[in-house]
Amino acid sequence: MDIKKIVKNKILHSNNIHTEDIYSVFSDLSKRKLDYSDIYFQDKRNESWVLKDQIIKNGTYNIDRGIGLRAINHEMTSFSSIDQINLIGLRKISSFVQKSLHKKNVILNKKFFYNQNKQFYEFHSPFNSISNFDKVNLLYQVDEIARKYDSRVSQVNAYLSGTYEYILVISTDGVFSVDIRPLVSLSISVLSEDRGRREKGTNGKGIRGTYKYFLKIDNHGISNIKKIVEEAARVSILNLSAREAPSGSFPVVLGSGLPGVLLHEAVGHGLEGDFNRKKLSLYSDKINQKVASSLCTIIDDGTKKNFRGSISIDDEGTPGKYNVLVKNGVLKKYLQDKFNAHLMKTVSTGNGRRESYSYLPMPRMTNTYMLAGKSTVKDIIESVDYGIYAVSFSGGQVDITSGEFVFSTSEAYLIKNGKIVYPIKDVTLIGSGIEVMKKVSMVGNDLFIENGTGICMKEGQCIPVCVGQPTIKIDQLTVGGTK
Picture 1 (cartoon, helix red, strand yellow):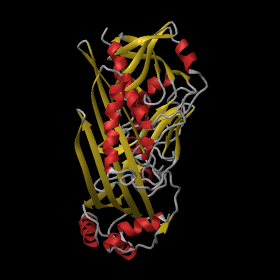
Picture 2: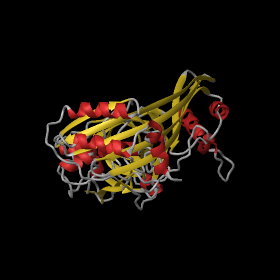
Picture 3: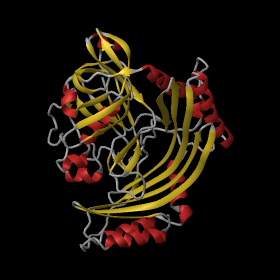
C-alpha cells in the first residue's frame, strides 16, 4: 500500500492543491521574520453508538476536515486554522499568520523530502469492517453478557466508537510526512444492586484497528467482547461486598496495568518539555539526577504495534519513538515537540501531539509505562504485614508544579500478614510523584500495558494514550479511607 500516494490524493489532489502551492505559501511566510513554519492537514471521520437501558439511544457519524498553519519566531507563535481543505482557505490563514510576523526578507531555499516511516498499525477503515447491523448487535451482546454474569446486574451502558483519519504534515525544515490512523474503542459501565446497595464496575478496550478485534475469539473459544464485559461485571459485583477502607500511612501495592495512570499523571506530565522549559515542573533541571528508586525505568513508547497511544508520526511529522525517560531511577530525557526542543537546544522526541488541526501541538505522552522487575506478585504481597493492594483506579488529580496527587481506587483490597483478606472501597491515595517513586522497593515481573480507552487531557486537548506497569510496592503512602 502506497500510503504517501493515498494521503496526497485524499488531502491535496482531490482538493486541487499541489506541492507548488505549499511551497508558495512557505515562500510568502519566509519573507517575514520566521524560524519555522508547518502546515497540518487533517481529514477525520468519526462514528459512535450508545446503548443504555437495553436500547440503542444514539448513533452518530461526523466528518471534520481542516488545515492548521503555524509560524514560529523564537518564543512567539502565530497560528490560524480553517475547517475546510482548499487553496483559498490555505491562503486565507497564511495571510492572517503573516500579519503577526515582522518583515525580514528571508528566502526559502529548502525542498521537501518524504521519509517512509515505520507503520505501527494497518490502515483498514473501521467503518466497513463490520456492518451497522453487527455494530448494533455487538452492543446488545454487551448487555446480554453482563446480565448473564450475575442476576444482581441491574443496568448496563455501553459506548462503541470508531475514527479514521488522514494526516499530512509539511514544514519549512523539509518534512513531508503522512499517516492514516484508525482507532476503535468500547467502553462499558455495569451497575449492580443487592439489598439496597449499588456499585459500579467499568472496563473498556481500544486499539488502532477495526471492530473485528472485539469479535475475535481466543484458543479457548472466548471472545474479546466477553472478556471486556465480564471484567466490568466482576468489579461491580465484587464491590457489593467491599468493606470500609482504613486511613493512615501504609505500604501500598499497586497492581499491574491500569494503575500506571498514577505514573502517567504524577510523573509523565512532569516530564513534558513545555513545563520544564518554563521551570514549572518539579523535574525541571534534574537531567541525570536521581528522581526515583533504582528499580524504576520509565518508558514512553509510540512504537507499540496497534496500541491506542501509538503514532507512526507525531503531529509535526517526526516518527514515533521509543524514549527512555528514567533509567534505573535517573532522569534521562524530557518529552519534546519541535518548538520546546528548539528553545531548550535539544531535539524532538516524537511527542508533538494535538487533538486536531484547530489546535497547536505540544509535548504529550503516547504509551507510558515502567519496565518489569524481578519480583513475583506473590513475593510482593507476602512482604506486606498491613497495607493496601490497589488493583485499579477510577480517577485522580495531580499538580504538575508540586507533583502532589490524589487518586481514588475502583478495586482495592486489604493486606494482612502477607495475605489479601477482603475487598475495600472508597480508597484514596495521596502523595507526591518524586517522593513516591523513591519509595518503590519492589518491582514485579508482570508488566502489563493497558490498551484501554485512556484519554489524556491537557490545556483543553484530548488525545488517546495507554498506560502500564508491573506490580510495584511503595513502602509508605498516605491512604484516605472511611473507616
